[in-house]
Length: 198
Image 1 (cartoon, one colour):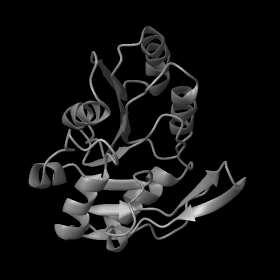
Image 2 (cartoon, rainbow, N blue to C red):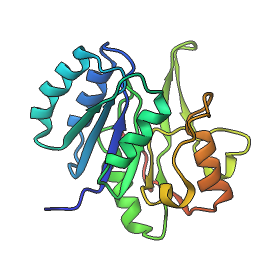
Image 3 (tube, helix red, strand yellow):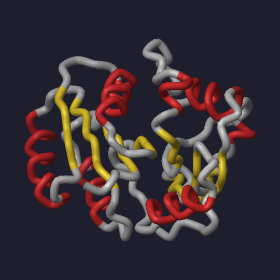
Image 4 (tube, helix red, strand yellow):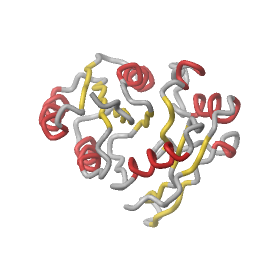
Protein backbone atom coordinates (compact mmCIF):
# COMPACT_ATOMS: atom_id res chain seq x y z
CA UNK A 1 0.00 0.00 0.00
CA UNK A 2 1.19 3.51 -0.88
CA UNK A 3 2.47 5.60 2.03
CA UNK A 4 0.05 8.37 3.04
CA UNK A 5 1.73 11.72 2.49
CA UNK A 6 -0.65 14.11 4.29
CA UNK A 7 -3.08 13.64 7.16
CA UNK A 8 -5.74 16.34 7.46
CA UNK A 9 -7.17 16.57 10.98
CA UNK A 10 -10.61 18.11 11.54
CA UNK A 11 -12.39 18.47 14.89
CA UNK A 12 -15.97 19.67 14.23
CA UNK A 13 -17.59 21.78 16.92
CA UNK A 14 -21.26 21.56 15.94
CA UNK A 15 -23.55 19.82 13.44
CA UNK A 16 -23.80 22.80 11.08
CA UNK A 17 -22.78 23.10 7.44
CA UNK A 18 -19.15 23.95 8.18
CA UNK A 19 -17.86 20.37 8.08
CA UNK A 20 -19.66 19.68 4.80
CA UNK A 21 -18.09 22.77 3.18
CA UNK A 22 -14.63 21.68 4.31
CA UNK A 23 -15.04 18.09 3.10
CA UNK A 24 -16.35 19.29 -0.26
CA UNK A 25 -13.19 21.37 -0.73
CA UNK A 26 -11.04 18.32 0.04
CA UNK A 27 -12.87 16.21 -2.54
CA UNK A 28 -11.87 18.79 -5.17
CA UNK A 29 -8.14 18.47 -4.47
CA UNK A 30 -6.09 17.53 -7.53
CA UNK A 31 -3.64 15.68 -5.25
CA UNK A 32 -5.17 12.50 -3.84
CA UNK A 33 -2.54 10.91 -1.57
CA UNK A 34 -4.03 12.19 1.67
CA UNK A 35 -6.28 10.97 4.44
CA UNK A 36 -8.91 12.78 6.48
CA UNK A 37 -9.05 12.22 10.24
CA UNK A 38 -12.20 13.51 11.95
CA UNK A 39 -12.42 13.62 15.73
CA UNK A 40 -16.07 14.09 16.74
CA UNK A 41 -15.45 15.54 20.17
CA UNK A 42 -19.10 15.85 21.11
CA UNK A 43 -20.24 12.45 19.82
CA UNK A 44 -22.89 14.34 17.84
CA UNK A 45 -25.13 11.97 15.90
CA UNK A 46 -25.62 14.45 13.03
CA UNK A 47 -21.85 14.64 12.50
CA UNK A 48 -21.53 10.84 12.50
CA UNK A 49 -24.29 10.60 9.87
CA UNK A 50 -22.45 13.15 7.68
CA UNK A 51 -19.16 11.31 8.16
CA UNK A 52 -20.68 8.00 7.05
CA UNK A 53 -21.98 9.68 3.90
CA UNK A 54 -18.59 11.20 3.05
CA UNK A 55 -16.61 8.06 3.87
CA UNK A 56 -17.99 6.52 0.68
CA UNK A 57 -16.99 9.56 -1.36
CA UNK A 58 -13.42 9.47 -0.01
CA UNK A 59 -13.06 5.78 -0.85
CA UNK A 60 -11.22 4.57 2.25
CA UNK A 61 -9.24 7.78 2.82
CA UNK A 62 -11.33 8.91 5.80
CA UNK A 63 -11.24 7.67 9.39
CA UNK A 64 -12.96 9.01 12.47
CA UNK A 65 -13.34 8.61 16.19
CA UNK A 66 -16.00 9.92 18.58
CA UNK A 67 -14.92 11.11 22.03
CA UNK A 68 -17.21 12.30 24.80
CA UNK A 69 -16.69 15.72 26.40
CA UNK A 70 -13.09 16.42 25.41
CA UNK A 71 -11.50 19.81 24.82
CA UNK A 72 -10.36 20.85 21.35
CA UNK A 73 -6.64 20.33 21.99
CA UNK A 74 -7.23 16.86 23.37
CA UNK A 75 -9.24 16.04 20.24
CA UNK A 76 -6.45 17.37 17.99
CA UNK A 77 -3.86 15.30 19.87
CA UNK A 78 -5.98 12.17 19.36
CA UNK A 79 -6.18 12.96 15.65
CA UNK A 80 -2.40 13.33 15.51
CA UNK A 81 -1.93 9.93 17.15
CA UNK A 82 -4.29 8.36 14.59
CA UNK A 83 -2.60 10.00 11.61
CA UNK A 84 -0.59 7.86 9.18
CA UNK A 85 0.67 10.71 7.02
CA UNK A 86 4.24 11.94 6.92
CA UNK A 87 2.90 15.51 7.04
CA UNK A 88 0.03 16.91 9.11
CA UNK A 89 -2.26 19.86 8.73
CA UNK A 90 -5.11 20.89 11.01
CA UNK A 91 -8.15 22.29 9.27
CA UNK A 92 -10.96 24.10 11.06
CA UNK A 93 -14.52 23.12 10.11
CA UNK A 94 -15.62 25.67 7.53
CA UNK A 95 -12.06 26.11 6.25
CA UNK A 96 -11.58 25.45 2.55
CA UNK A 97 -8.37 24.55 0.77
CA UNK A 98 -7.58 25.90 -2.68
CA UNK A 99 -7.77 22.99 -5.11
CA UNK A 100 -3.98 22.86 -5.58
CA UNK A 101 -2.95 23.42 -1.94
CA UNK A 102 -1.96 19.81 -1.23
CA UNK A 103 -0.13 19.48 -4.54
CA UNK A 104 1.92 22.59 -3.82
CA UNK A 105 2.67 21.44 -0.26
CA UNK A 106 4.08 18.12 -1.43
CA UNK A 107 5.90 19.65 -4.38
CA UNK A 108 7.67 22.01 -1.98
CA UNK A 109 8.31 19.20 0.52
CA UNK A 110 9.92 17.12 -2.24
CA UNK A 111 12.01 20.08 -3.39
CA UNK A 112 13.17 20.82 0.18
CA UNK A 113 13.43 17.36 1.80
CA UNK A 114 15.38 18.87 4.71
CA UNK A 115 12.41 21.09 5.58
CA UNK A 116 10.29 20.15 8.61
CA UNK A 117 7.53 22.56 7.63
CA UNK A 118 6.19 23.90 4.33
CA UNK A 119 3.59 26.63 4.14
CA UNK A 120 1.52 28.63 1.69
CA UNK A 121 0.43 32.23 1.75
CA UNK A 122 -3.27 32.15 2.50
CA UNK A 123 -5.88 34.48 1.12
CA UNK A 124 -8.72 34.88 3.62
CA UNK A 125 -12.06 36.64 3.58
CA UNK A 126 -12.38 39.37 6.21
CA UNK A 127 -16.13 39.31 6.82
CA UNK A 128 -16.11 42.40 9.01
CA UNK A 129 -14.35 44.49 6.35
CA UNK A 130 -15.81 42.65 3.32
CA UNK A 131 -12.36 42.37 1.75
CA UNK A 132 -9.81 39.67 1.06
CA UNK A 133 -6.42 39.86 2.68
CA UNK A 134 -3.22 37.84 2.78
CA UNK A 135 -1.98 36.11 5.91
CA UNK A 136 1.80 35.99 6.19
CA UNK A 137 2.72 32.78 8.02
CA UNK A 138 6.46 32.77 8.62
CA UNK A 139 8.25 31.18 11.58
CA UNK A 140 10.39 34.32 11.90
CA UNK A 141 7.34 36.36 12.94
CA UNK A 142 6.09 33.94 15.62
CA UNK A 143 7.15 35.96 18.68
CA UNK A 144 5.05 38.93 17.51
CA UNK A 145 2.42 37.33 15.27
CA UNK A 146 0.78 33.92 15.49
CA UNK A 147 1.26 31.54 12.60
CA UNK A 148 -2.07 30.65 11.03
CA UNK A 149 -2.35 26.85 10.84
CA UNK A 150 -4.28 26.62 7.58
CA UNK A 151 -1.93 25.84 4.68
CA UNK A 152 0.79 24.89 7.17
CA UNK A 153 2.07 21.34 6.63
CA UNK A 154 4.58 19.90 9.05
CA UNK A 155 6.21 16.55 9.69
CA UNK A 156 4.39 14.40 12.23
CA UNK A 157 7.74 13.47 13.79
CA UNK A 158 8.00 17.01 15.20
CA UNK A 159 5.44 16.04 17.85
CA UNK A 160 7.76 13.31 19.11
CA UNK A 161 10.58 15.83 19.35
CA UNK A 162 8.68 18.84 20.76
CA UNK A 163 5.59 17.25 22.31
CA UNK A 164 1.90 17.46 21.52
CA UNK A 165 -0.44 20.43 21.93
CA UNK A 166 -0.56 21.54 25.56
CA UNK A 167 -3.99 20.92 27.08
CA UNK A 168 -3.82 23.93 29.40
CA UNK A 169 -3.29 26.33 26.48
CA UNK A 170 -6.87 27.59 26.08
CA UNK A 171 -6.33 30.78 24.12
CA UNK A 172 -4.36 30.08 20.95
CA UNK A 173 -4.28 26.34 20.41
CA UNK A 174 -1.36 26.10 18.00
CA UNK A 175 0.78 29.04 19.11
CA UNK A 176 2.77 27.34 21.88
CA UNK A 177 3.66 24.33 19.73
CA UNK A 178 4.56 26.50 16.72
CA UNK A 179 6.73 28.75 18.85
CA UNK A 180 8.47 25.78 20.46
CA UNK A 181 9.07 23.84 17.24
CA UNK A 182 9.36 26.36 14.43
CA UNK A 183 10.95 29.34 16.18
CA UNK A 184 12.80 28.21 19.32
CA UNK A 185 13.37 24.67 18.05
CA UNK A 186 14.73 25.96 14.74
CA UNK A 187 12.75 23.48 12.66
CA UNK A 188 13.46 24.16 8.99
CA UNK A 189 10.63 26.07 7.33
CA UNK A 190 10.13 26.64 3.60
CA UNK A 191 7.35 28.44 1.67
CA UNK A 192 5.45 27.05 -1.29
CA UNK A 193 7.06 28.02 -4.60
CA UNK A 194 3.80 29.15 -6.15
CA UNK A 195 0.65 30.91 -5.01
CA UNK A 196 -2.35 28.84 -4.02
CA UNK A 197 -5.27 29.06 -6.42
CA UNK A 198 -8.74 29.64 -5.00
